[in-house]
Image 1 (cartoon, rainbow, N blue to C red):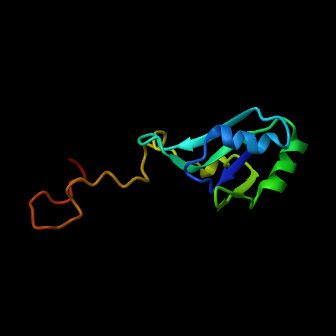
Image 2 (image 1 turned 90 degrees about the vertical axis):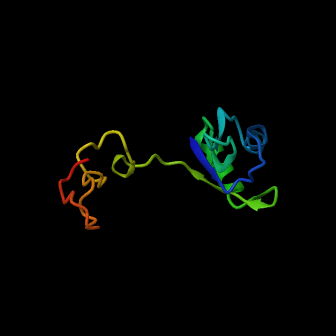
Image 3 (image 1 turned 120 degrees about the vertical axis):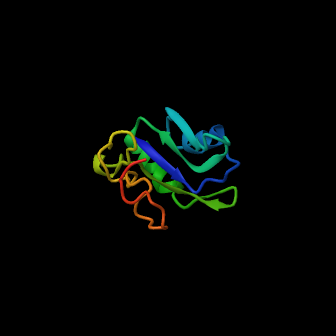
Length: 117
């Protein structure tokens, strides 16, 4: 089962998070999500546990627990439905309001509303 862990202290390390969950059973993987530019933790992560009963026990026991002074949020991670994912590469036919160029601002220039660049 994939488990979401939120409101993590920014200083927590993956080894510490793994240790917290291993009390309840086998842990396959731990991933704390970090900012790709700064490398700093974003305050949430995911834990993968192969045994659903052990995973559920960990969720029940750790949700709301205090870790380094913060109450963490722990629940089953559900994938987002396809319709809710934002894609910036696949939607080339509108919706992003980029096509108007110089028009639409009526600042007295002579470019008018040509809809281009």
